[in-house]
Length: 318
Image (cartoon, rainbow, N blue to C red; front, side, top):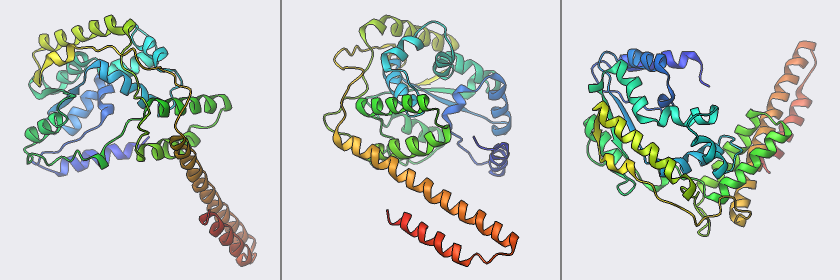
């Protein structure tokens, strides 16, 4: 969580841009409540805001959303989680997804502060991966093709076996009561990051789509969203009909029990690398503390310093 001063610095930076166009993008803006949206528009909009949001098909969004949550500690299996979030009302899991993904409500929140004429919705088209970047370039007056979509910069999703491995690690963390800091360092920055940097195993299945039992509810949500956007009259780039589709996926086991050896090795490697990094950091902190204590007692600390340096060197060699 960034300190409050980070927001002040951002506001100052945007203000210093003067008449230039500034793009501030953060997916958490979609979770902003009314007061927060008003503050963002007021302090970043500089009197001329424009709010741009992307709407994605729910049958594509939900599987992707689940695996993103798994990377953040989610313990529910995919179908179990899907049953929870597709209920008409619910607890934190339900609110976490629908606060930013109920597009008409999001439009109303932001339009109440920026004005409906200053809100644009881009409909994501899975068949045209350049649609959203092209729309951003056009709205910002940028050269066509400037935004890079090359594979090396992509945010690869986890495959289903990879996501299941992480989900089961999440259960271990919860059962053992290990800290969120340890999870962030070892799992998110170690296990997950290492797997995402590698190519997925060709035999690994993707996270499954929408099962047959959920199709009717997804179709209902689709209709509500499309009709809501049409009633608002908000500017839309793309085809709203794309949001009124749902495909069934019944061919994938939602809880696989095996994972490729390469993926498992990558996960272990990532965890070990981060564990070694933590150990080196702890050794450095311990060395500094002992040196300070030695100086306070007037004790010559050079032999200890030599020993600590030797330990750090051994850690680097691992």
